[in-house]
Length: 445
Image (cartoon, helix red, strand yellow):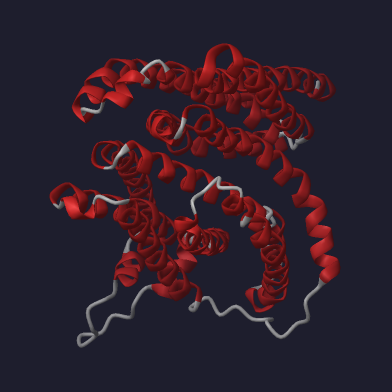
């Protein structure tokens, strides 16, 4: 939906006795430029809130609870791909081909697929608790958060398809930012609330509020077609598109999930808290790159490639490279200058003792960010095979490297293995892009 159509459909009618507008009504009255600005501001604020949460949890919780929180976050995030299978990549493209009066046909089929995936995945995920990878006390929290996060994720993607980016930004802030600040303040001023269940409860409440916002907005979209039968052939066609991509995503995200469990198995839950802390601080780099660099440049890369503007494409990719390198370098310098004072302020010996982990964890994150330069170059050209292969091989390289390095370096071998895998992925994508780019450029000329 265009911004102008949004204004026409959702701007409240002027009336001298009209009630005060709701928050969503206020958003509707904003101009397109203000909505975009507010959307960016909300996303930036969300990133800041997530950073503050991890930092203060390191101070207010014991290291064991921080370690468990880190395991919960990465496991829920990873399991989302199993439940959703990235099928939205196919559904969204299909929705935009038709009027909303038919959208229900496709959404109903996606819901049917999701039900099947839930039936298959939920028992498998229970193995995490039977194998004592996660404590039984977190079983209810895990499945409640997983279902809620998955529903919010799919609802957000549907709203993006109808150009409701501001609503999605509000949802993101509520489910990832607002509750983080509120629970941090609550724990800071009252020691009785400094427990992991309080943090998970706040996360659950934030997700619940976000889902209410999404359902309210979707109820006004007048989507029809719900009486159509489930189209299993359409689902099968979509799976052919989604499966290769989700396998690659699972492999890449597997590195940042398995490393936590492997580290905990090698060093213990107490020291995992340090790994989670340093990982959370380093992950802010990717968040900044996503929000400030990638999201602004890669759409132009796609457009320029389709228009066969080779020189302009090269210039835009060069801009992406310069901005990525600059942000990564600046972030790294600031991080190294700030880490020691931050650890002193936290006042916990376990984090200071594990200080040597930080350079390796940060290096792995920087390499991951740099690999997105050729990644988006390949993605813009529609060349998915090298991306998929690099992620699959990267996961294998990580596992093999960790297996060897843990014997030599102990728990430090885990972040070193991550660096090895990310370096391999960076080299693979870069070489693939250079070869493919030269071939395509020669054809055009």
